[in-house]
Length: 112
Image 1: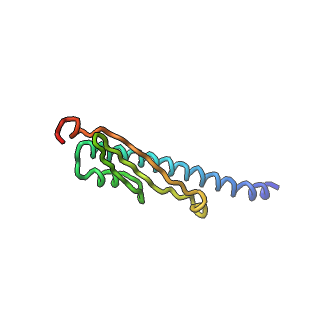
Image 2: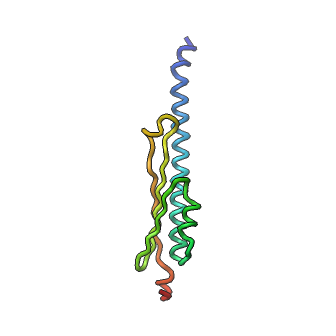
Image 3: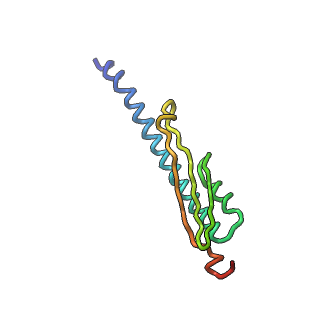
């Protein structure tokens, strides 16, 4: 009797563990997207020429980083795919996005 219950319950526990692990990976990737957007916006606001490279280095693998300069602000956007676990990759994949905005320091200081 115990063997049958274990045979039914074990796959459910494995699936639950896989989903929890995927959730932690997705949360970590989202935090990396937020950090990369902040790094890119801060570097671009200072006028660094390598702001895009810095943001890309901080972003998760496969992320798309865009930095848009406005008259007085800088907007950095990071988008990254987060596929689901194993065979559920196509079904559970999500796209993570983070945006950060900063005031351009060169404009505020009157330098440009």
